[in-house]
Image 1: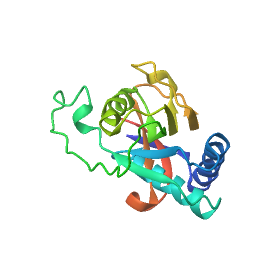
Image 2: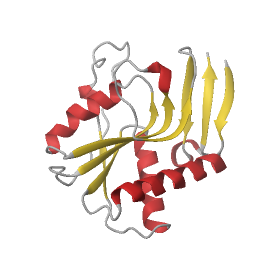
Image 3: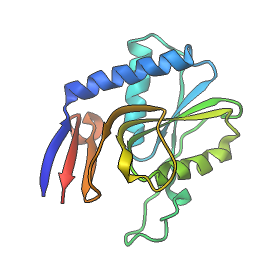
Length: 179
């Protein structure tokens, strides 16, 4: 197994600030926008972006939440090991709001399809956008594309993209792992 670094912590820092600026350009004061991190690993990216928007760009009225898609996945019963549910934490209605889904890696698009189904339990958004740190563009099984992407990467199917967050893994880094 070989491991190659795709992004180091400094590059991730720069990308996160660029993504935050793109969100500000499109959503201004976030009055009608909610940011939703997709469990399990999109929540770290969402929390980091919310922190940047609040602390560095002084946007105070950001609504954010976490969405568990475990039981909405189409491969829920097809896995060898049972999936463990995560926690959904959305304490607001998304009816007529602009929803920005946030996830670390866009691979096949199946997680986003599950998120589209899951969010309906919280109302009908007026608009849904997708922000990802890594876009594996040639791996799609569904016609889903990000509105905001940190880095686009072309990897072969045997390769895996792994995102490490300092909050969970001790340091920020993105790796390409060849099994």
